[in-house]
Image (cartoon, rainbow, N blue to C red; front, side):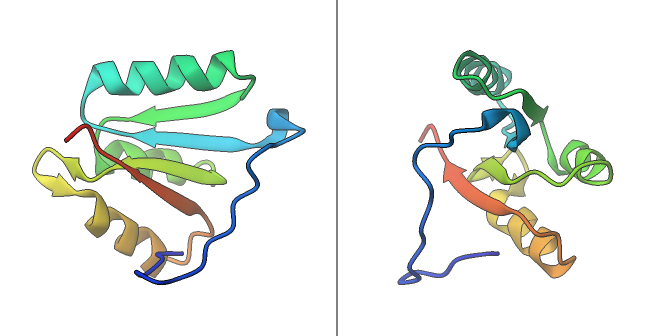
Length: 102
């Protein structure tokens, strides 16, 4: 689902069973990917995937459907919004949180 400005979004802020929750971090910066991966692992998430670009992310999506994708606004030459639209257009049932270091 790609939310539009003004959409109401509800997220469960505390997951009691993180062992079945799947996340993907999509960011072109290796330091940021490692930071999020390490933080999520430390917080008890057992299924965390990382991708440096849309091609890697689609490879992961061909095998698993994350409950949530943390996605950078800018992915080098690619844009996070374009990736989100493609995923939504394919009907992949996931959610997104946009992240940016800028």
